[in-house]
Amino acid sequence: MKLFDVYPLMDVTPVRGEGAYLYDNAGTKYLDMYGGHAVISVGHSHPYYVEAIEKQLRQIGFYSNSVKIPIQVELAEKLGELSGYNDYHLFLCNSGAEANENALKLASFKNGRKKILSFRKSFHGRTSLAVAATDDKSICAPINASEEVVFLQWNNSEALQQSFSDDVCAVIIEGIQGVGGVHIPDAEFLTQLSKLCKQHGAVLILDEIQSGYGRSGQFFAHQFAAIQPDIITVAKGMGNGFPVAGVLIHPSFEARYGLLGTTFGGNHLACAAAVAVLDIIKEENLMQNASALGHYLIEQLKSIPQVKEVRGLGLMIGIEMNEPIAGLRNKMLQDYHIFTGTSSHKNVMRILPPLCINHSQADYFLESFSTTIKQIT
Ligand SMILES: Cc1ncc(COP(=O)(O)O)c(C=O)c1O
Image 1 (cartoon, rainbow, N blue to C red):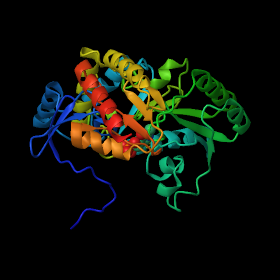
Image 2 (tube, rainbow, N blue to C red):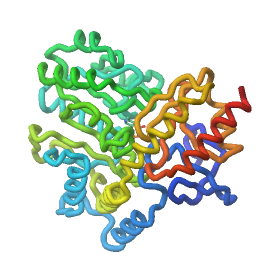
Image 3 (cartoon, rainbow, N blue to C red):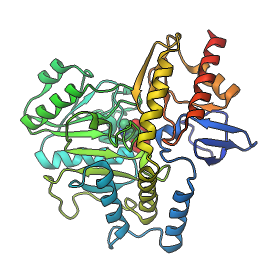
Image 4 (cartoon, protein in one colour):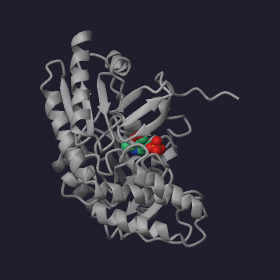
């Protein structure tokens, strides 16, 4: 059997990871400024994380959600404490799309409505409702296109005001738009959005799947604004590569048996990985590191004349150039062994390194970036 060929691949085969570095099958070392698409939060194969998973596996790796699983409670408590959302409830699942799918279902269960407001250039996943709420027709199959979704202009208060009515079920918005090219919502825009949702009985869903878990320098990117969403979705950095995701739910939502469910979600191993991630983020002050290193990178990048615009918060950075970044990206991989990310905008490079990168790694990236631009322009 062959693999279903849906991914354009870099010509690299990583076989080992350590912190912000990867090593390929020939022993070549790479600096990971992409974090496996914002997934690597605490660093590759962090010893505490590896030990926690190993220890858990030796005891019990999985049992279904039909028995007590105390490590789920530990995860919920630690997540509540570190994120500041102690009074919310946690539903555990396996991927970002699944988290958004459940969030949208919960919204509709609550107010009985169907209409979703989403934003231009948004990305929320590839399953039915999540992809319907994603602004990319090329990945939306005809079977998904029937959902009632309206795409609004980013940061446009007037358009937002005009689109609201009492039939809106939910608004879904990324804490920082990632795939779309790194776009930050204005704090006032988020405040207005939150007020309109309350006025019209709509549910506000903050998709923090890419921007959450400390990447922005705050636990959640939306915490730069004074809002409290009804639902927050998390995945990527939550497990540092172990598939785990979550839905943080305001206490006004009533649970009942069978309302949501999953076979694998919240299994012992996934929880052990997720608890270890939270412990490391706290112990190693990774949010502060993301904030400081992100600020440094953004300021330095802004001073490079060939760069058109730099957008970002913490270690979620979009570098917009005047031309496509494909050549620049390949050359940085070939000549300097640095992984970087793309976006749906061909001129925007995305930088999403592990939250543990240090100054000398940031400087290596900056020097390699500047030299490569000079060589190709
Ligand atoms: C903001 C956002 N939401 C949802 C998803 C979907 O997550 P997953 O690929 O785990 O389903 C992604 C993935 O890139 C994302 O960036």
